[in-house]
Length: 242
Image (tube, rainbow, N blue to C red; front, side, top):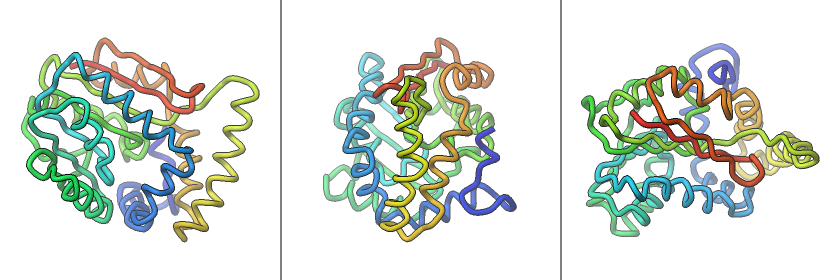
């Protein structure tokens, strides 16, 4: 369902359009994330990585790592031996590498270009896989989830942080108005990309959230799945084990 929504035009590869979109907005991405969420996105990431504390993963894969905020947060709370972050946007990765270097984390966190649907790793390579605000951008959601399952060790855990659609009145109506009209306007003025933040709203609406996403996780090989809504349902933490 989510793969039908593309940033710029109906024709052509969603993967290529998403890559171009994030290359375009990369210099503004972190600022807009924190500003438009009123800083709540930081607490969402913190709560998501803490789900893995009891698992004590030593080797973590961060898919759709972007500018590496999730990878940095995971290192802070989990202190693994290594984290590999992959993304299809070279501009986002460049910013992420700069942040990692400033924190002196180059020996722990490595970033590389990578496609979620064709990960360049052997089977059963990682103790845990994390994804923040990335799965709704997959060209083929099921293929991406299966590929992450392939490189996850048996017993390992997948943690997905993703936007969802609140259902509580009147918060649902306020959220939709903000996401559909206010956020795209601010994003367009700041990033100069007319479509990127309109795509954000459209992709969230199309994404199979809640129980529907848990069904997709189970279909693609995960068990013990769980959905934990955050901030009245704006965002959710999804988990599943291999």
